[in-house]
Image (cartoon, rainbow, N blue to C red; front, side, top):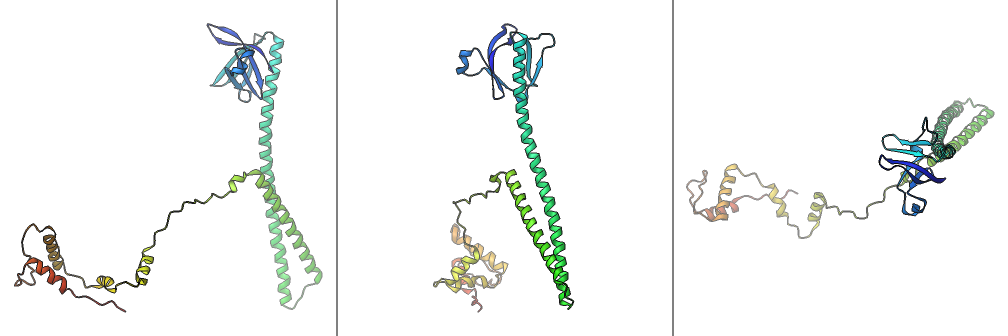
Length: 282
């Protein structure tokens, strides 16, 4: 529906004629009919607004979204206002019916799924009872008190029928669940094509070094050396400091060998070659 309605603008301009268009539950207005191609100056969604009529003026009506929008409109006469009220009310009712229909469909789907799940529990209990009955017949046969063939046939028939009903109900339950939930929820994420390389573990590196033909067993023999005393460590640390910096010429005296006063470089060499080496254990 479309036509001319007067809209309240402000206290200076007062009521101004506007061209209103009601389409798909949205009421839009323009300066004039010729300005429709330029775009609307404003719009309001009928599904979320309230329609009110003026108590004393039979040509006025109001469209209100609490806290957001407030349209004051006036028709040419009472008949024109009544025509717009019917159109606006019908549009609002249709949108409400559509939303209610969707909510109703969702509610019915939930109820159907609950019903099917309760049926599955019932059939599961029946299956357990019937299987237990057949097991009792088998135990009687082992005790040489064979049951009648009619009882076995009847129990087998009941079990087969219950299985068929259980499978049918389960298929219906799966169909309802697939219709309720979106297919995107069941899609697995795609693997990342860019996979970072995994660095070899220390165990793998040790295996590679052992399998290498040029591997020297003397490298691993350093881990089997006897612990050096703290005094030797201090002496070696002082010698390294002297040899690295070469900023002074001082000899380090070992308390265990006070008579030996050779230069520090010679002492370091003697200490290095005097350390015993242990052969790797086989």
